[in-house]
Length: 266
Image (cartoon, rainbow, N blue to C red; front, side, top):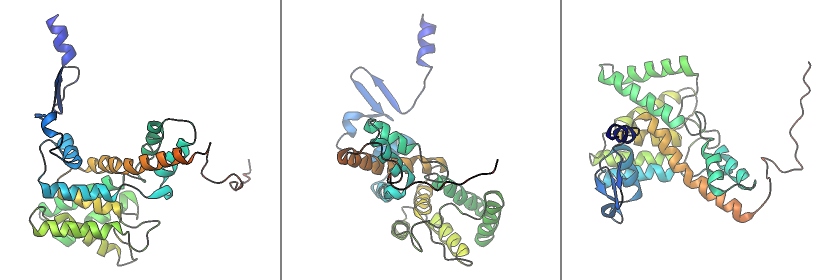
């Protein structure tokens, strides 16, 4: 019986939570000591990484989360959540519908951008000059992924995504205080300068938040997860607003407008 009990306990293993009747502890911190003493961004950091950030790190982290909360029904994730909310599902189902729209193209660009930043940083650490590391990494990216560089350019905000300059400003201020290195801000701005030689392409929200997540040491895949966490605030807000507004079975366009029919030869 003892062996069976051990097998059951070992089925899942976690260093995130230690829980028993009357006890909840996260990363070695009793929940009652956390409630009222740390912020939600600090809690997120502790849960995914362990340990607590400094107040300055938490502030920069929070700025990235705030910047990505919403982009209105122009964003497929928001539109999908609002449409789902008119179909009779619960608010959690509407949220899940929107969150599940966040894939490689919509929502996942931050992860791809962080991977590129880390690749360039590694090349520099291995002895490449800064400029050579940028050029070679971009050449390799374009050969494998095409000309669109994740984190740069925006289909709606032209020529500037208003969120990016402010986030980069905060990174520069943090670098002056030695909170972060500023290395990834340098890399991002160098990429932007390189891309702008041919066409005026500015950094977008994915690129700017990827800078912050890299500066703070988050692994690239967490850039996607953290963006989903941030955007879920907007998804929740829009789903709830749509529920309050009412409406039934709202599709992507008003009923009087029909999609163009294309006759295909068979």
